[in-house]
Length: 136
Image 1 (cartoon, rainbow, N blue to C red):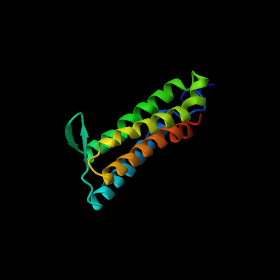
Image 2 (image 1 turned 180 degrees about the horizontal axis):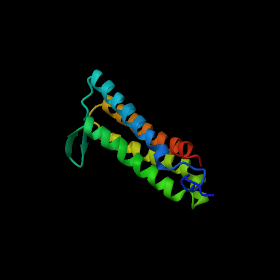
Image 3 (image 1 turned 45 degrees about the horizontal axis):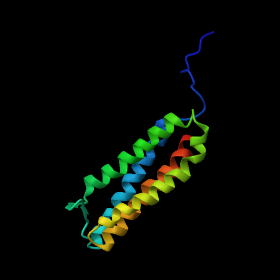
């Protein structure tokens, strides 16, 4: 008797299960950008002496790239390294708090608060959403 079902690699869902987190991250952070616009924030940061604007493309990329890398890292390493599963959330929380220093380059308080909130959105999804979605 043959089976037509695909071979199972385990009960854990793959990276695809965490993909909705990317959408949540982008939508939440673009909503925050819209709020910053409504509050008349400058939406600019100074990085190494260069003033840069924060727009839709920058926010979308900054929402997807770090979270996508975190999803890939967790999906590849967590099944093999038990200690990583235990240390994931605290480590990501520490990295998120450290990343808040980057918002000091904002040219106004509103921009800094909005950018800091965006960091917390991505960090929170990475710390708690990824393990929850991947079932580990």
